[in-house]
Length: 255
Ligand SMILES: Nc1ncnc2c1ncn2[C@@H]1O[C@H](COP(=O)(O)OP(=O)(O)O)[C@@H](O)[C@H]1O
Ligand SMILES: [Mg+2]
Image (cartoon, rainbow, N blue to C red; front, side, top):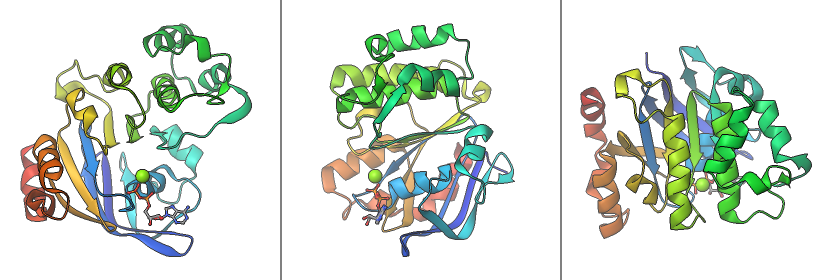
């Protein structure tokens, strides 16, 4: 049994079927990338795994650490170790970032100072969450929240979008700490699914497998760098490795 096992997952949003039978599995200590054109259902998949309201699972299952989580509430899933960084992080007026960090923390309190420094967010700790933050600051604030939460499964929805190059490397430093990238793979206890549009994050974080989602289906999987190169060169419609579903089992077996 994999750490995360998604089987024949169908998800509807406002009565419209968006995910049409997703199969995806991820082992402990692994990082997966999700590619896919706009509107293909990538954020919907993250929402369905995290249990956000509005994503109705109509068929299939999501099993995490051996437990079917598809009927659990978002807070139950969070307590089990699932953490999400939003594509579009909301602003929350009246709640300071520090208060949220203290509430969700599974870390020693002095880690707030250390990790805020790492992410250049010290001056933002006593401001309302994301209120008046730039796109890049919001994304760094998401990573800071994850660093305090230390979830076992990280779901990162376009963590580098709207972030300048200098800060992408800062974000990646934070993510590498959570994912224990300095450890050999057999010792890592956390896994991640990263949605990336630009692929920039691949320059900083080594990923083990990539899945391509189109029109609510997983169409293929393979080596992240190779698939990304092909998408960049030829676009999704001519990307033959994007459609190489037959290689998925073989590829996963070799991991
Ligand atoms: N809250 C929503 N209400 C209506 N339609 C939605 C909602 N969320 C997503 N969708 C639709 O679902 C499809 C997939 O969206 P999404 O998962 O955000 O795609 P991606 O992240 O791959 O760009 C799109 O057609 C989008 O318009
Ligand atoms: Mg999206």
